[in-house]
Image (cartoon, rainbow, N blue to C red):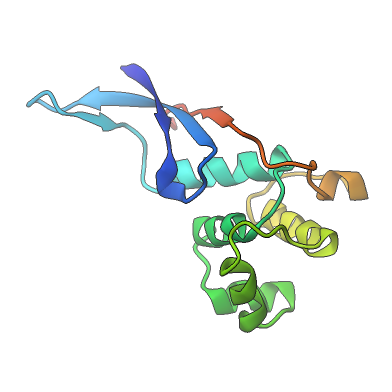
Length: 140
């Protein structure tokens, strides 16, 4: 099995790079050797743990990575679907610190990530990274 670095733009986030295991078919075609949904879930975990700023683009990605509709996401956060849609329609606009902390805490819970209760652990760093890299391993 080989590993390959990919600028993974399918997630809608321009800064994500992944190192993935690849295999080849009998015809010699290369493919990513990971189960469906594994990559998006791993990226979501990394975004939350690395305290990446939450903008509209991250909201769209995280919501979809968790397999949630706009309505179910809004309901869980105690907001209106229209409010969430407003975030999503502004992909480069960062959420307020309070909303960012709420989204991070909610996603951490859904992804079974342990975060401390400190404000500093819920609010992101100041800037979106130029490059967020993660290495994927085939699940056992």
